[in-house]
Amino acid sequence: MKKVFFIIPSLTGGGAERIVQLVSKNLPREKYSLKIVVFNDTRAYDIPGDIEVVSLHKKRASDFFGLIMRLAQHIDAGQPDIVIGSLTYANFVSIAAVWISKSRPKLIITEHNNLRKDFRTERFYPVRMMLVRLLYPYADRIICVSKGCADDIAGMLGLVRTRIEVIYNPVSLEDIGVLKNESLHHPWFNPKQMPIVISAGRLAKQKGFDILLKAFSLVRQRTQARLLILGDGTELAALRELSNKLNIDKDVSFLGFQENPFNLIKHSEIFVLSSLWEGFGNVIVEAMACGTCVVASDCSFGPGEIITHGINGYLVQPGDEVALSNTLIELLSNQDLRQKMRTAALIRSRDFSVDNIIERYDAVLNDLYLTGPRSPVKH
Image (cartoon, rainbow, N blue to C red; front, side, top):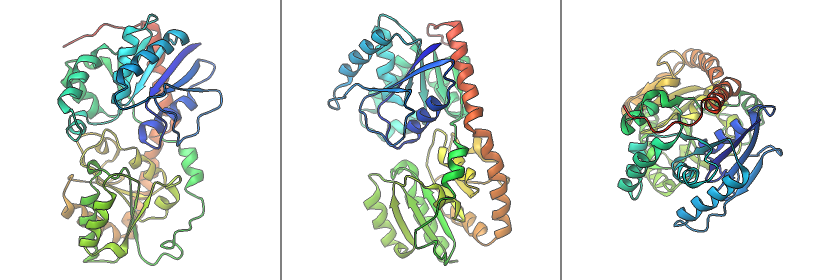
């Protein structure tokens, strides 16, 4: 039986955290003994009782080297065969901890975003990029959530492409199938007086909610509709102010983080992802699994690998509120077209089922276990 440790900062309500929960929950127990190591034990997702969750008790923002030492000690005590890091900061800690550990397990790191663009919005951009270039080649495998992400990292690091695996993020169709049919209590749906456009995500500049609001203001000049935005984040106050400035505040509602967004998505006419960049775009597949028509920004990575434009959804240029508004107006005015997209979206979502994606993780873990660790290989 292979012993696997997942390393992630926490289990709060993000996409990468949800992936760790789904993968750990569904890997076959007859083959794997699993443990999740977090830096802070805050949770938004339930973890099966047979998986131990261990906290390294991160003390402060500067506790980087302390985390490395405590993780290395935990690795030597637990003797895992494979360590899997998730999210960039946890990847840095995992690589360094495995490097100084005595047991030296095999190491996988996972990347969920467009690093070049994501880092530019953060402090210490040059330092973070230096660490990626210095540390990432020491991973035995890198799992990326899209082909675009994998190609970019291969080029950035000069790694041979065979060192990088592409595994799309899984979606629990079974869970969504239950949750999307739960009763709704929001007054806009009981009864529904006009079509509803919905979006969900972290309220950050990356997600382009300001573009969505501007596009929606153009939509409201030509037809009746309402806009629901789900999620929390630092941009909430600015987005509320923009909504007021655009004079659409009476038809826009910010609902915050929702434990069950799927019944809201199912009963909305259109789901929009307006991001300026993505690594994959989990919420696109989740909206498709709700049977909702999807419009998404055609970011460098992610959405274009999920959506076939005009077949199972629509893609628009990132940051183009006019193109987005025109697409929304076209769909809002054509119920038959929306229904066609809804049907095709449901079919496409099945490609990302947990069973399909777990097969890919199982294959990578098994191959790495058999072939052993590799030293860094450059082009």
